[in-house]
Amino acid sequence: MAVHTRMYLEFFQLQEHPFRLSPDANFLYLSQQHARALAYIESTLWFTDGFVVITGEIGCGKTTLLEKFLSELDESVTIARIAQTQVTPVQFLQGLLAQFGYRPFRMGKAELLDTLDRHLEDLLTKDQKVVIVVDEAQNLERAVLEELRMLSGVGSGREEVLSIILAGQPELNQTLDSPDLEQLAQRTRLRYHLKPLSQQETGIYIRHRLSVAGAGDREIFDPKMTALIYRYTGGVPRLINTLCDTAMLSGFAEGSNQVGETEVRAAIEELQWSDYQSRTDRMAALKVGATHTLTGMETVARLKVAHKGEDPREYPISQGRIIIGRTSDNDLQIDSKFVSRHHAQIVTYGPDSVLEDLNSTNGIYVKGKRVKKYHLKDRDVFVIGEHELMYLKVKSSTD
Image (tube, rainbow, N blue to C red):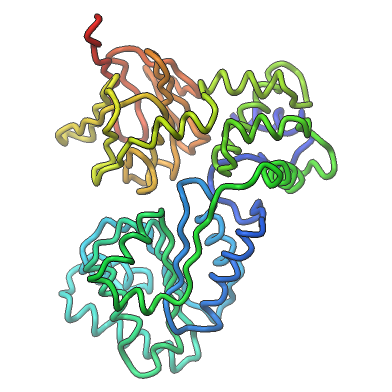
């Protein structure tokens, strides 16, 4: 793998992979809206008097913005970052104290609050600021959000030391607008919603990431391809990364270090994408439930997920794409240290489903062999980390 990576980078004369899916602050492209959102996030250090809320659809760059912000903080700021948000209030407080170096998992709620209060007061006396960042905050229970509100306002001088940033999908705004969370909404000083990039920004984004990766001023992608890439990605950064990475791999395989229409269309065909607008229209009816199962469209297959003797969980697969990974922003979440943040995807159009590795650390294995891409057949079993997943075709009424 290391040899292939080196050959790939040498072929395109790059120092790094330009289109990885994992968030990397060094590759952040500050469009006008991303720059504004970052300024709002940074303002939490100047005005510690309320919450800052950043929302956006999956793949629009929220996590990368947070990585950029956190990477630039100095030692005068203590950071607590919460990514596991499907928790009870007690579990949330325990996770928060664990970020501060405590072992709080046998504490009751009263002891948790008292310990947290004393810790924040101690930091205040040392002129330390505290930034609590909650990613995937749309999954927080209302009771947890209420704990956060009370945490921000309890104790003398607390507003001088504590800043809270909530980042999540658009449902977070709907939650905050609920009548029973009016007090929290009143303490929300700034809200900003990230939208996909424009077509012009899409072209700049591609050139920016290539430049950071070592391309300098070289045009690896034909500028005329921006419109085609935008058509199939809708300007969503994560989808741009997926398409551009696949197009470059196609060029590498064919010995072409310039990416033009041939390579981009080969990537579109390999990904089995239709244009973004039609995919969005079809997916609009899909609902992602609390267990991350997709409903609302005809089920074409089912996925059984098993782990170390536990009862298997089952997920329906419909037309379109599902992302599998460790964090809760995935369509199918596998919360394991052996699973990457965004580990794999299954793309289904027509009767066929294609499994693809999303540059994960530990890979995907089928019959003991690591695979990058695999056309799934009925009853195929593949392994992600410590989990086994079985793909089961659903017979149609015409079969």
